Length: 454
Image 1 (cartoon, helix red, strand yellow):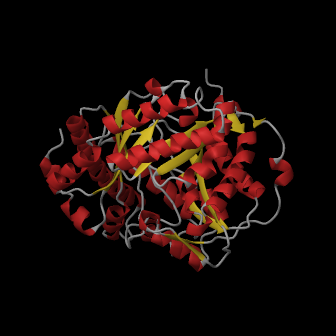
Image 2: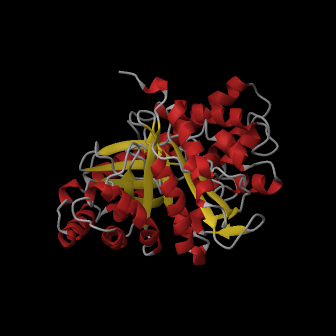
């Protein structure tokens, strides 16, 4: 049982150390909306979302007020639209109409974002899924709240390199379509390997087809809390360090469990999972990079960074799984550059490069996240970076992702400004040697030998 006394224990964390519940995400199945009539489909989608989520924001605010726990975002995820629109959509523009419907429904119920403008193409693309992918630049440039994701590979199926090649161009086109706002559209677009069905975090949230009709998933945060407690054990052994992180992760996750349980009860919607990720913000002190420095590094990116991040990620998960029976989503540590002031400082100091970030993604929760690159980076180079990250996920049987932002009109040494939780990002240099001949090969990279587990 969770009670108010456990919440009171976290008051100082909330008031002084940036502890928050990053999101309550309501997953909604749109499978029962499917029809071959586009007008009817968009009407069904709007009705299903606005009916199911009508009380989400109000309930979130009530929980915040009653327990004193900040809930930063209220979000919705839906069944991948590549599936929902397959019968009705005959062109990319038809999918854009669905994107606008999602945007209108999200605005109506007052949520911060809606995810699920997605396609799952790890092994191959249907015509409908390819149309959705090709519609992404227009969809993201003509909506405000819609987030998009594409799953390009998995440990079981390998990597769909045709889709990887296409996504390199789509990211470029999305950057061009939103160049007036520092290519902000790319901040709402992420590609995955091994995408989870229950992720509450944007831009990658979608409601998997294995899920119930509606579900409540909660994402917690708290890098500032972990950083503060680690200051008390400076110079102590690794055993003390690990125990401290585990105990803190337990307390943070219990807050998420409480919020999830309350939201589930008040909305009369089943509880799904708590995602116990350490998700940073631009606020000073709310940084995963600062935790790495507190562990003993001069800057994130210094030798030892990957080992320190592996330790942190593992202890967060070990502490979190004791606090909730249902841990899921991504869970662990995020390392987005633009959303983490410590990461920004490391890039500007020259200690953190794109290649070092790629090494760190072998042991973190997600991957190359919110990284601004020069606007003249070629589509094939973007596809090559994606392919490398997909390979890490495929071989290591973990989720990896890429959210790159080629900032049109800007280059290395300049900054991209996104605002709010997205912060700002220094534009990082990219290896200029070509991988075009590799990317232009057709087909799939096969699944690794250890994928055969039957």
